[in-house]
Image (cartoon, rainbow, N blue to C red; front, top):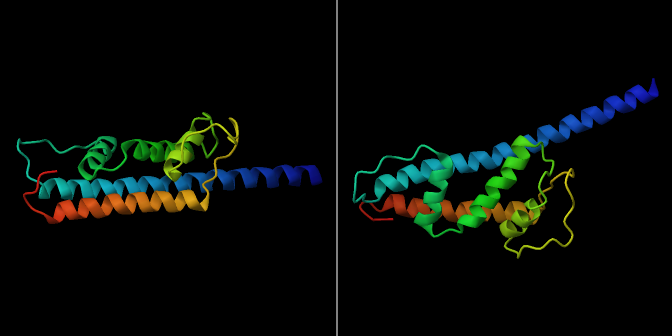
Length: 154
């Protein structure tokens, strides 16, 4: 009976970890959605030389935002890959290159030193969460500036 309770406790812990990972992934996705709205507004405020169709694909919108704001597109893509690990893989690392993404998000150079392997759980250090928030805040502020200037070209 005690073995059964231990198995159940481990299963509950695992489910809790997966739920927490999905929550983190969803929170990062919500930041992307919010930026998507800001991109639409900034695009309306910007003068379009040609009649452009609005972008519907969030990834393309985020690329456009990086171009419009001068943000680091590689860093933006790295945040997207980190979010995907949390949303789709329950926080379990399937590609050790995700550690390079973490370093890029933190503003550090890529390096394999100290990287844990496949099958381990991805954890975001407080410094990484702050770096992600600062990056999105800066992009959002630039997009708001663009949206506030009617007729300004991106």
